[in-house]
Length: 144
Image 1 (tube, one colour):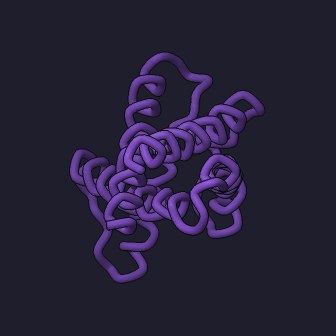
Image 2 (image 1 turned 135 degrees about the horizontal axis):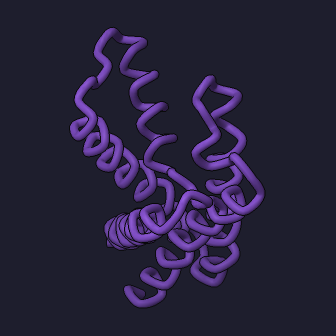
Image 3 (image 1 turned 120 degrees about the vertical axis):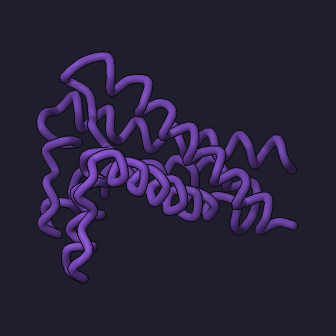
């Protein structure tokens, strides 16, 4: 049952991250556009196998689904090991995910501007991932 609880909590954190992003991205220009980062990464991978997604809505939906699944799996790691370390793990994994979202795209040929065009956008990007991780930790605490 522990793995199931970890996955449920990870899914909750991933949904919270995406809900936060969706709510804020429509509020202004000086915010992260994580969906654009994901769309570019997904389509670059699909182009490598000759199957890019050309329909904008389909690309958005596929990116959202992939993002939720990958973040849920990643956040589920917070529940592994001793429960007394849930909060430090959440903070560490959230920070790692946020920093990775800023640093890894450029190294892999993905446009990092949607999440790293200035200091405010970088800070918010990191904050989003930390938020998702903290929601995961809180969910784990409530489930245990």
